[in-house]
View 1 (cartoon, rainbow, N blue to C red):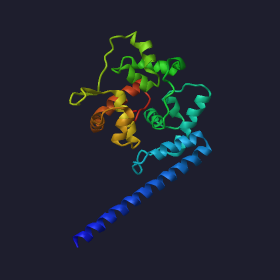
View 2: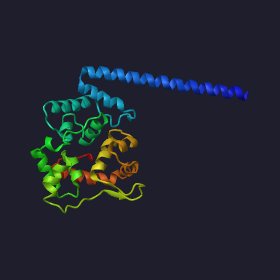
View 3: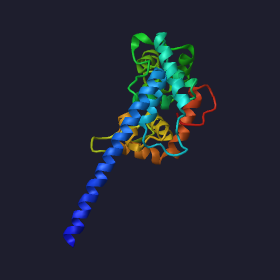
View 4: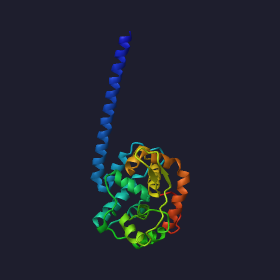
Length: 248
C-alpha cells in the first residue's frame, strides 16, 4: 500500500512538472509572438511591449505604467536619436509623464542607455545650468546633482566643483554592517529606489537595476518617511520651487 502511494505521488509530481514546463513554454511563445507583432508596428511600440512583458510582478492597481505612455517615451527616445539630439532623462520623460527616476530604470531594463553619457555629445541647456547653480549650495554630491538635473557627472564637476571645491556632501544614511564594508545611502540612490518601488519593481530587481546591495534597498524602503522630505526639499530648490510630490 505504501509503495502504491509513493508511486502515485511520483507520477503526480512528474505530471505537475510537465504541466508547468508546458505552461512556461506556452507563455514564452505567446510573449515572443506578442513582441514580434509589436515590433511590426514600430520600434517604439516594440520596446514598450518588451518592457511591459519583462514585468512579471506587477501589483494590481499600483505603479503600472500605461503602455501608451511607454510608447510615447520610446518615440521620444527614437526621435532624439534620429535628430542627434542628446536628451536627458528629464526631457525624455516630460511628454510621457514618466518621472526621470523611472525613465532611467525603464531604459536600463530594455538595454538602452541615457543620452547624456558622453562628454562630446552633451552641452547643458540654460535650464540645466540654472538648476545646477541652484543646487551648488545643497549638501549633494556631483553624482546626485547630475542625476537630478539630467546631465553627466563631469558637467557638474567641471562647472561647479572647481568653483566650490570644499562643498559638503551629506549622506541620508551610512552603515558599516555590510560584509563588503560600509555602504551609504545617497540622495540619488534613495530616489532611484523609491521610483522603482512606486513602479512595482521587486526588492531584488531594484538591487540588480541600481547595482546596490539588497540591505541598502531594505533600509531605504523602511525609512522612506524619514528620507522623503529631505529629497523633496532638495528637488524643490533644484526645480526652482516647483511643486514636488514624489522623491524623484
